[in-house]
Amino acid sequence: MTTATDTTPSGPRAAGVHWDLSPLVADAAQARERLAAALERSRAFEARYRGALATIDGPGLAEALAELAAIDNELSRVGSYANLRESVDVTSEENKDLAAAVDRGMVEASNALRFFDLEWLALDEDRARELHDAPEVAADRHYLIALRRFAPHTLSEPEERMLAERSPAAVSAWQTLFGQITSTLEVPFDAGDGEGEQPHTIDRLLALVRHPGRDVRRRALETLYEGLAPHADTLSHCYDTLVGDRLAMDKLRGYGGPMEPTHLRNELPGPVVEAMLDAVERHYGIAHRWFRVKAGLLGLERLELHDQYAPIGEARAVAYPEAQRLIRESFGRFSPRVEDVARGFFAESRIDAEPRAGKRGGAFCAPVAQDASPYVLMNFTDKMDDVMTLAHELGHGMHFTFSSAAQTALSMGTGLALAEVPSTFAELLTFDHLMETESDPSTRRSLLSERVEGSFATVFRQTVLARYEQRAYALRAEGGTLTADRLSDIWFAENEKYYGDTLLLPQGYRLGWSYIPHFISTRFYTYAYVFAHLATLALYARYREIGAGFVDAYIAFLSAGGSATPDELLGGLGVDLSDPGVWEPGFREMERMVEAAEAG
Image (spheres, rainbow, N blue to C red):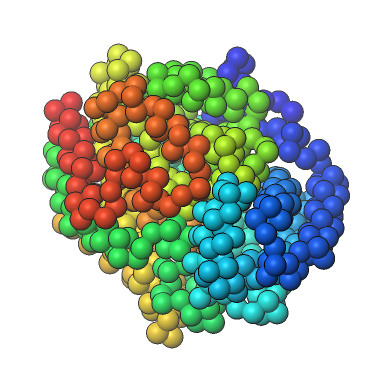
């Protein structure tokens, strides 16, 4: 396999920068063998421990949890391997077959292991407290306690088994169809670079919204929406089917609303999340101020959508090897231990950065397993913004690396909202380093404006996405089918609320909802970004205030993984979620960013 590390150059657009999955599993055949072994181990676990929780003691429970963690870890490794393979080539029949086999295997394993969770949830409070307070299970105490919050929404074992059996056809198939359409979509486009019309994926077209040429930006968006239009009905049907299924499952489980499962996974109270979204909407004026200023800087009376991310100043190109160096330096200034984490990703070929047809769009960092190293997928297009994306995903990598070293396979993971804090913090580290070391004035102006607009995209735009989901679920709950036109109406209305009269939206943008994978994969995922960004701005202000004294506490936070609640973990760093003004430091920081960009 041809790869690029921190010592070998890559070509344009990170050519040849592919990951090496062999440390996880040798090949598809071995993945199937390991899956079969994990299934056999799951069945043996069931035979040994079914009915045991009623009489088990602390040491016995610790032994059971260790075996459960080992099984979970092996399933995660094999499942991650299959998912990572498919994410870089959704057209491969071998990848599809392996993914289908793993999906079936996961259902079978879940069916064998489900009894343990159900028996744990069925214990009365006194018995459960006796067990989770036993010193032998201290490492997984929070895991056990947190699991019980799902008790009111858990069905009988036969019912849970039946629902799991239907999941691949009822859920995964629609997600796969969405992924195949959006990953393989290519449309011809002339970017004005002398190469004439070339096939462009969704990600390549979206990257052009930061092109310095206004006509290129406008045509790129128009081409994107024209390319999506023939698929709008299919994409909306995928979403309508998934939302309808989720609402039906919510009714069966007795959830109070479609956001409750996400809140429980994030361990965040619904009122805290709603208050946060309300606070963001009250501060839309910060964005309006910037949009008016930016229109003036661009010599326009009013921005149009294709002007939203127009460069202020022209940022220089950044080749992939330089991006590696910049990130290592950024992380190293904070902590040599953090730099070592980044070095491992590059040196061990755990990043797939080259854009290509059939590869999933966007970016992610996969934790893989407690005894394996994480992997990053992104689509590097030689932009300065790609440096920030890479830093973001490696921030997740920091979290996964430190938590897997300190926690068990059951306790290393966190809810979505807390998981986004390290990635956002890593972006801030990289931005500060770039502003201190970059000498080109035009690039500095570009960095300042992109930092402002990145915060807006994370806080304001993700709130728009959350509000869109709320309205879509409400419409479906009332019996309305989520057609492309109805989704477009909701999408446009929520975006108009954000942009106000400061930015003109084209009619093509009515399809802006259609290619966003978070709606398909994980409902209400997007508010996690809002929470994380505002919380991280507050944390970063403390880091600037106390400097090196913050580092050890922050690495301890990363190492804690999911071993405590978000309010406990953030409280240890000085962020109090019970404070009604908890979000205000974040908004003040955003205002400071706008002022700096105006002055720059």
